[in-house]
Length: 313
Image (cartoon, rainbow, N blue to C red; front, side, top):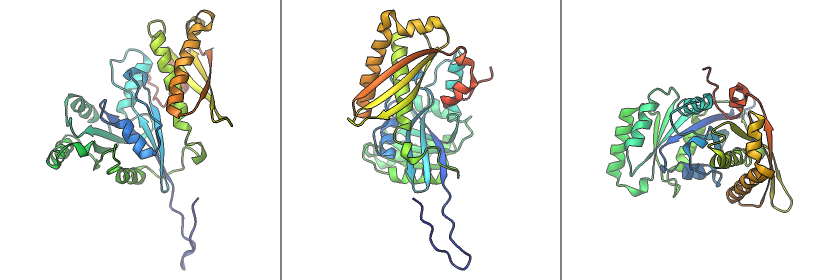
């Protein structure tokens, strides 16, 4: 709630304008992105996908700091793009995600600028978004090494600010949170505060189910499916009821996902339900539906719903 104070001779004081923006997180595996998200958000709402190709532009957490709403977006891994969706995923990663306002680059203080970090810094040279450098795991290395790493990274790229944090202990995280809140642009909140808790989880639950489909059917159904969480209902008994729709492009693909006698969809649902329940920390009732949506892979609206920019070619 915002309280307006009484003003002086010039009249009532104007409440501080709200700010809201997307912050894309970029970093090599094991750099501590998930731990940092949890520290910024204050609750566990993130997982690490085991296959880089299965992560599209995904909301990992929503932070409210004073009058600002910060939407943290994880970015997909980089791989050789083949289809339109693949190209969109790669384009999204290095454009700072479709709607990102700021790119937050994470480096592991112990690893320094290794081969993976070097490749990331090279690719980021072409990204026009404002960049913030976050050096994580600072409690594990001497101060001299931190200063040298900071200098080396800033010589490579023009970072607006540099932060040294320990996501695990929380050291430096408050300063980073305040800086992100000040850096996102003025504008209304994208998510009402009473919906913030399940917004990232809806995306996360859809990605978990899609990963199970990929793991079960990657040879028969390479990337030609998407999952949307249609409803998320908290029940009085402490469980949550989730309804998801799996969209495929052709009837033949729908039959593959269902499997003989529905065996495949049951197995996918059981695996997804178990993992979602572990993430949300409560019993989950998961209901999956499979529908044909012809040409979804060439539909710009579907890409926008996933937070991806639609490639024209």
